[in-house]
Amino acid sequence: MSITPENLGDLSRRTLLRRAAAAGLLATPAASLLSACAGSEPSKSDDTGAAKSKDNPFGVKDGSAVKVVIFNGGLGDQWAKEDKVVFNAKHPNITVNMSSTQKIKTEEQPKMATQPSDLVMNSGADMMDRSTLINEGAIEPLDDLLTAPAWDSEGTVADSLLPGTVGDGTQNGKFYVVNVAYTVWGNWYNAALFKKEGWQAPTTWDEFFALAPKIKAKGMAPYVHDAVHGYYPRWGLMASIWKTAGKQVVVDIDNLKENAWKADGVLKALEPWEKLVKDRLLLPGKLDHTQSQQAWLDGKAAFIQVGTWLKNEMSATIPPGFELTLSDYWSNADDKAPKDVFAASGEGFVVPSKAPNKEAAKEFLRAILSKAGSAKFAELTKSLASTKGSGDNVQDSALASANTLMKNGGSELISIKFQDFYADLDKESQNLSEELMAGRLTAQQFVDKMQAAADKVAKDSSIKKQTRTA
Image (cartoon, rainbow, N blue to C red; front, side, top):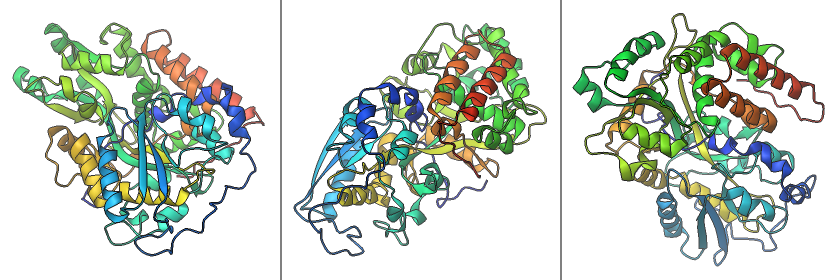
């Protein structure tokens, strides 16, 4: 895949973090409040708004206020404060009431059926389930945002976005979620250490297993990962399945096709992960994301798999001279798509259907996706925004390695959809991923259990089915 300033993206922060708490939504008391939205028409503003124009395509009224809620996770929230400056430069008479939290579902879900915030960044471990929000009519379709003029560039908002961003935010044929960051996932290592030791970063599993004894001889574990949150190991497992078995198998998995998990290549993709565990190449201990990342920074492990928000999340504790470098997930011989890279947009914003100022919420999204706003995002987070060209003027080794990975990538971006489509299957896949990486399941048992879980969802007529076409 050829990457230029027009199509290169990098980092989000947890496209998949937003899937972490999916299964818990319907079990919460607030879900009954959310269901009150079902079948209802989105509420209308009492005032008529201002005249619409290129600089005010949604007719936001002077003197109004917009409430914006930011997820303050690995990317922080300073970038959003800069977007407020960008917004108020064009709309000085509109008040932006911005707050930050990590408790999105806890704090925002109970408001959804009554008086929600105008714009919510639905991310992190405590997030609202996207499919439920959509199916209950609780969030606004944002197709008109895509066709609106870009904030400070030619063309429409859709024209300004990196590949995959619109598709990642689309469900049931409508665009609901505005992902403002772009993530690349893979295996990170310290290039300075590898240069010192004369090690070559592996590109295949065979090369990794050959290097592992040399790493262990230096008193380091070859690998570490988050063993608490199941979506972390799932990234690597699903990336391997795509690379080995090919895109169509993953599309079939997303579409609950019969025996999709038992297709040729799936088991082969998972067996190296099983070997990694059985050969005791993982750093011992049940470490979460920041603990595992710190252990890696402390030189206790040579590789860690995580997304490109890593540098910003751990910026305070990166040792001097540590060269954060991203490499692709390793491939097997005869893989069908060995060069395809796992990259996607993430950090999704939603506009509640009952938000009192939806017009200003959409206008604030235009500001976030602006060239000025996205450049500040890249500068502050060392991650690329989902707007084209956001990182053009940022000099950073971690970002550069992600760019190189994308430039050398295949024709497709690896993407997984079933965890967005089905909350129960999402949670089960997380649990089983943890079990596999803890050595309590074999690769074959993982495949069998995932197939059984997918079959259960497929046969449940009460679950609305989603279709992935590409």
